[in-house]
Image 1 (spheres, rainbow, N blue to C red):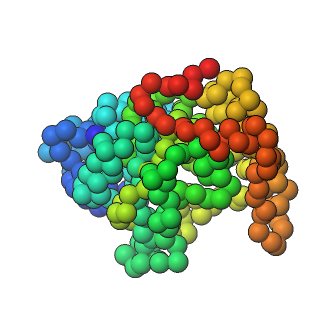
Image 2 (cartoon, rainbow, N blue to C red):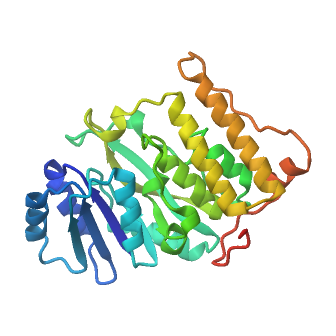
Length: 304
């Protein structure tokens, strides 16, 4: 198992980072932390505090990678059967990780397992209205189809799944590479989209992550303007073509992504909810998208 912890101005979260590392450390676990903004003093202090932890690696350089590039690079370094991205200001437990790994062991067609995300402020107070609820997301009783994936970004499905447990083999596939949109907004949602094209996302009823909300956090600074949705659409189209090549299924998916991406971009500033819909109510391409089982088996039957 590989736990990947990207760092950025992380001094204030030292206690949280140390608590996570000590909670997750084990003989068959590797933990990699990476600061790409050259905070050598903090990284040295971190290494000193955690010098007794086995299989721990702290990377510190001045490459100035953005948060997506940092995580993408960490993914290439992972060696465990499974990997998990853990933000420096959030918390998880060994038991939650064990449950998510067990789900992937038991469900070989799934590429990612995630659980419930609970919201807190920095003082430990619960913020129940911000919990990322996934209880309805449990498609293991049926097929995982292209239509499931096409709804993922626009309907906000699988919130929190970005920090779930992922098969390393899938995450390191070039077609699933974590790529940044120009403003990095929605990058993690697009990555879930590309993972979903490779296989099923599985929800496990376990409190998997404590997410902390505070005004200075990165995502609180984002503005979801029209360009953010257009940028996401471009990467989604790339992911579809990389996975399905030239095919009727790819044509249907690309058309659907472009139509709904444009609809969301046009809706910015409107007061009402965005109307999401599938393009074709019938026809062979629409039927194929609902019937095609995107089942991961270790051998990619969808290779171009």
